[in-house]
Image 1 (cartoon, rainbow, N blue to C red):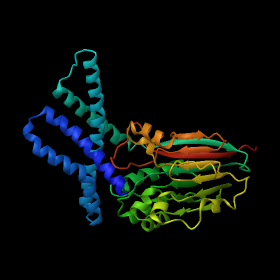
Image 2 (image 1 turned 180 degrees about the horizontal axis):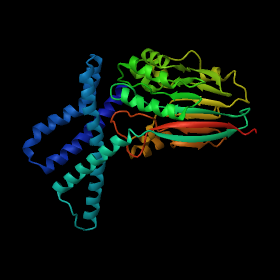
Image 3 (image 1 turned 120 degrees about the horizontal axis):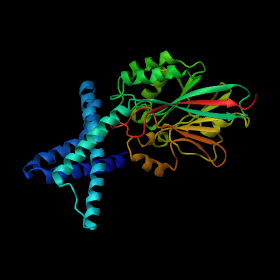
Image 4 (image 1 turned 180 degrees about the vertical axis):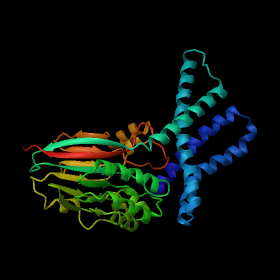
Length: 366
């Protein structure tokens, strides 16, 4: 965790150096001390959010988080657009062409484009889509069963009652037989979660609601996270399986459990020991990592948010070797990777809209 924090702050600090360097070249150099101070404060602002949350200062935490993470989103967009402009300028220079923008209009153009995309991303993050997936199988004796998949809500400081009400409204609209949640339902900086749990009571699924842990359940505190999930009506599957609607749901802890020392009482193989070869097995697993030795028919995962902000989607695809949505694996099994329903860090999404997935598993038997 410490290594990740150091690397993240180094990258974030470098982004500030780039942006503030643009300011330095565009405006009077007398601003240097103020720019340096602003860069240090803004780079360390996520740590300030963490500190305020640990002190229990809720209002200060919320206000600081919104400023800090909105700025983070803007800075990322500014740097990406700025680098594209820099590349264009460099190519023009190599080709002995005139670059139409001097530093001042270029800076303003980049800043305005980043601001426009930030606004669009803020709106997109609040437009929850329902993605429909249909799978047929001879393993279901008859009829069909529907599952609503939610993932990566990140409930806590920045996403609370208003956001959760929109999620609940969509769940009530699609009226699934089963609700499944594949982790990161709470955030690492979560607080006041008990009141949020009651929101789920208005959308109880007839065949139950089931959840697994994600890495943020461990960051927020495992016991607090489990209590929230259970109060919200979820049965938490931690290396366990359950039959519902003619299918078998198997849930495993996120691999964060291994580093936290909080392993579940049963592992995946034990959970699958009682599963028959004729059962249609749906594996709930937070991170989209496929274990070739784990028998399942459909794996449901989240974690990577579809990149959340373009072009991060390409990076997550390279890192995990999977694409968003439904993929048929080489051995005939299926993997579905959700874009997630909430946001983490910057409260925006760019070309990776939030989703709730309605999965229909139907029998091939007439």
